[in-house]
Length: 132
Image 1 (tube, helix red, strand yellow):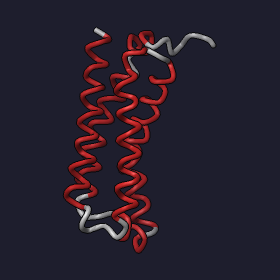
Image 2: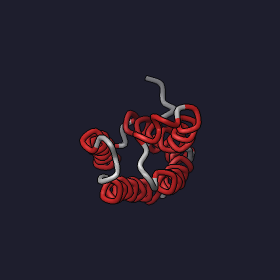
Image 3: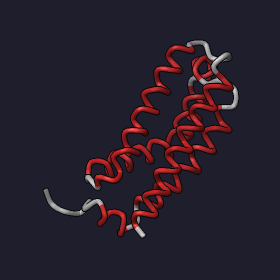
């Protein structure tokens, strides 16, 4: 059962990567700094692919990295919203159109991953609660 749940997390991470690629394909012409946008996206994609390819190892560090990445994915829309409220003139430069739509879809994907990763059986599968 745990393997099936981790396969769901893998597929959701791959869907998130697809979402990042689609977001860049749609908005790259509207951003002020396209190279920076692509660099950050490539770093995120590379990190996510590393996690996807390492989930089968059942290493504790992979679970923690995946868990922290999902928390960042959940908090990202709130951080972007707060940034756009308090520093709107800079947010207009960094956030292209359609950012809220993609942020909401990413939020939903990461909430599902977070729910799966907090399952006690998944944590036991990765030996998260074992002492060093």
